[in-house]
Image (cartoon, rainbow, N blue to C red; front, side, top):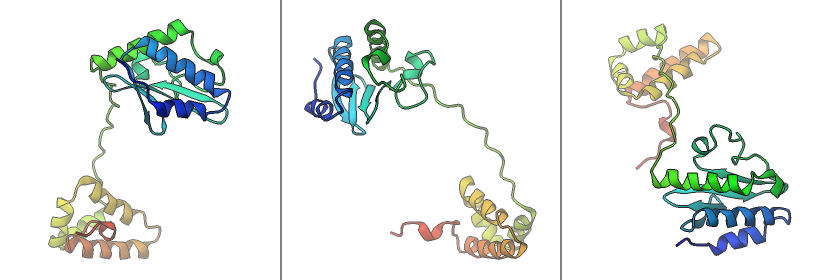
Length: 198
């Protein structure tokens, strides 16, 4: 059996007058779509859960938002880019029909119960690290620094490369190169000063 959360009642009660009927309507439909839905507050707004987050709603000064956690799978790519799946909701007329909304809600619950995952983003190909020639030569001449540089993660090596390459003047670049070699010889990454000490 589903569960209502008194914090959702309080959230709706303190929302703007225009928002209350919208939030109450969404809530009523969600419980109709899934009698086992459970309410909670997540990120400060009412959320509906069954096998994970199904959807959430929010009220702002001049509009409401309502969105499905897996909207890309539910709305066939028609979801709004802004917060919520249906853009700015200023009145009940801005929502899809009850029948359509109930269908979306049932589909959202079904996706959760079947443990369907949201497709991940396609990973960008990592561009190989381009170590500038002056840094390469300096590392060759300072074996201790070279060992540390090679042992660093790609992101930490890249920080050194960007810091040195980002210098606008030759003098600054030379100073950064000397400092980098000193820190690397001491086994330090570029941001060693900001690391938490045990």
